[in-house]
Amino acid sequence: MKRRIKRIAPLQAGKMLGVLYGCMGLIFLPIFMLAGAAGAFAQHAQGGDASGAPAAAVAGIMFGMGLFMPVIYGVMGFIFGVISAAIYNLIARWIGGIEVEVE
Image 1 (spheres, rainbow, N blue to C red):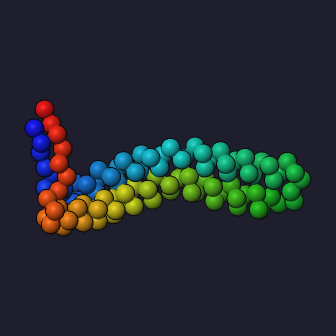
Image 2 (cartoon, rainbow, N blue to C red; image 1 turned 90 degrees about the vertical axis):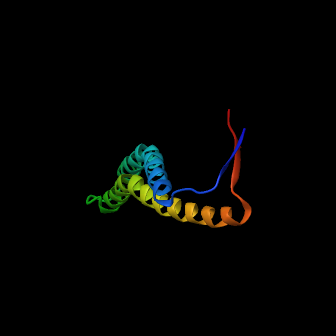
Image 3 (cartoon, rainbow, N blue to C red; image 1 turned 120 degrees about the horizontal axis):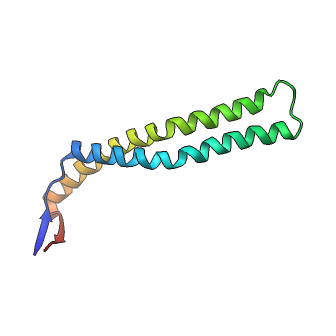
């Protein structure tokens, strides 16, 4: 039996994609944390200056990006989810939407 998706609720699509993209952003969290720590350690091991300001700045930026990555991904997922659903609804009116086969 074929069914047609005629409309997608934009707000619901935005919420769903916001959470999904936020969770995907969590995947990058440990990568950025390790990169920040490794960069700071490598500069210190190469005999950086005594203050360590550049190493601390790099580590701080990487830690900050790692912490904000899930939030940024979530917000962008919400915004683009709403926009994509609205565009889908507009186009589906013209050409009929996506057909799926269900049992």
